[in-house]
Image 1: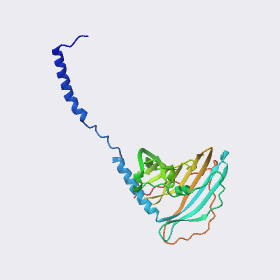
Image 2: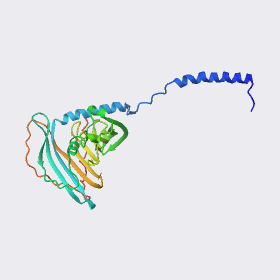
Image 3: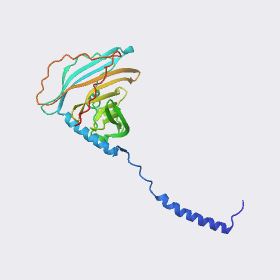
Image 4: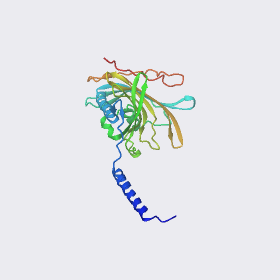
Length: 287
């Protein structure tokens, strides 16, 4: 190597100065903001707010309806043999104070030996399995657009939903949903839910489920069927659980409810012992 001569050094300094003057503004420039995600020309955040507003409206309308809820929970052993069962049929009504009330119609002695139905399960029967995502719920959840999917004859937007903060197992009574929802592209309401309730701990486990809605009245989509078949892993043991919940006989509350004793109809089953299928989803007639 040789020492650089004075003239060459001067040219190099001048060149570096010019280069630095060009690069300096670029270093201070802000990187462009990422393009906003849109669906059918609508920003995703706006789409979420629109269907959440409809879900809030549905939640209010839901309070004006009474219906029958039929819950069956079974534990299964080898070869799908039923080892225990919980069955409860209730009329969910509105009392004189305008509050939801359960009137039990049929509740034989449970034969479950491996699991216990807890207050948290009942909370999920009321709020997680028939999940609704209203405007008031959005601050608690992260909602991510996944894509589009056709369910039977219904075009839907698909979103993943998870709690914004990890649920605290020490606050088991604060129930959250985590999973996936399908939103009708026309009415902008949820028509299918798939996921589970949280939080869990060592002694409290909850199955993954699917819930389907039907169009009860124009633009009123209410849950009609929930199904789960899952293995719950407890410390030292695992239990397979099958759950079926049917929501039937929706009718607007008229201020007078007459309820008689019932004899529940046997559940239709296919060869596998599973229900033959969910009720068909109905689309509202368009003018």
